[in-house]
Amino acid sequence: MVLYVRKLFGGAWSLLVGLSITIREFGHTLFKRKAVTLQYPHEKPKLSPAYRSAIKLIRFDETNSHDCVACLACERICPSFCISIEGGKVEGIKKKRATKFEMDFALCSLCGLCLDVCPTTTLEYSKFYDEAGYNREWTFDLLEEFRDYEEQFVGEQLVREEKAAEAKKKKAAAAKAAKEAKKKKAAEAKAAEEAKAKAADAPTADGAEAKADAEPKKADAEPKKADAEPKKADAEPKKADAEPKKADADAAEGGDE
Ligand code: SF4
Ligand code: SF4
Image (tube, rainbow, N blue to C red; front, side, top):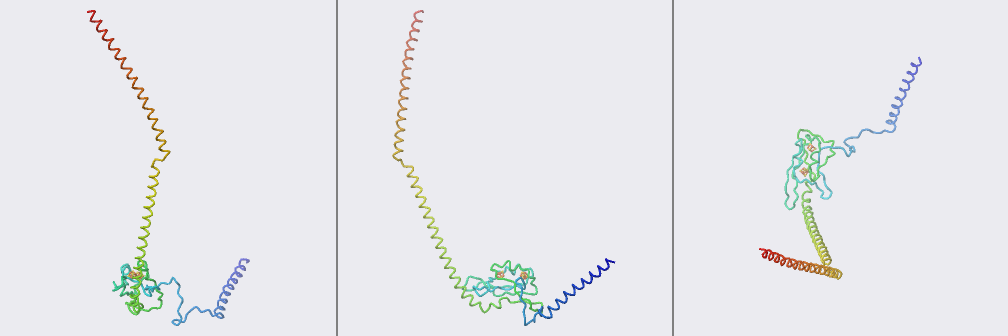
C-alpha cells in the first residue's frame, strides 16, 4: 500500500516538472518572441568560420588579385576531376597567370586536396550555401571577378618585379662585401698569429746566455775523452814490453838445441 502511494506521488511530481518546462518555454516564445528562423532571401545567416563550400580564389590585399600561376597542381590532384585550368607566361612579367579557371561545383566533394597542394595558397573554401544548379554542368568561372583588374595587375607586377630585382642585387652586393670583410679580418688575424709565433721562436738575451752556459759543459766533456786517450796510449807500452819477453824465450829455446 505504501509503495502504491509513493509511486502515485512520484508520477504526479514527474508530470508537474514536465509541465513546468513546457509552460516556461511557451512563455519565452510568447513574450520574448525569440525568432529561430530567418526571412530568407532578405536575411542571410551568419556562417561559422568552419563552414566549407566550393573552392574559390583568394584576393590578396597586396596585389588586389589572385595568385594562381597555372601550375595545374590542383587540377592534377583533384579526385573528382572538377577543376579545369589554362594559363601561361604573360608578356612583360616573369610570373605566370591563369587565363581560365573553371570548377564544376556538382562534382566537388570538398576534400581539400587542391588547397593543400597549391604552392601559392591562393585557394580557399567559399561560403556559398544558396547556389542552385539547374543542370549537370554546374560550372563556376573562378576568374570572373578578377578579369577587370588583370591589366592593372600586370602593370603593377612589372614594377614589383623590378623593385624585387633591385633589392636582390643590393642584398647580393652587401653579402659579397660582408664576405670580403670577413676574409680580410681572418687574413689579418692569421698574420698576427704568425708574427707572434715568429717572435716566440727568435733568440732572446736569456736564451743566448742559456745556450752559452750549455756550450762549456760540452767543452768539459771533451777533456774526459782526451783523458781516456792516454790510458789507451799507456796500454800500448805494456804490449811492447811483452814482445821482448817473448823474444827472450825464443832465444833460450834456440840455445838449448
Ligand atoms: S575540394 Fe577536392 S573535390 Fe573539390 S575541387 Fe578541390 S580537390 Fe577537387
Ligand atoms: S595549385 Fe594553385 S597556383 Fe596551381 S593552378 Fe591550382 S590554384 Fe593555381
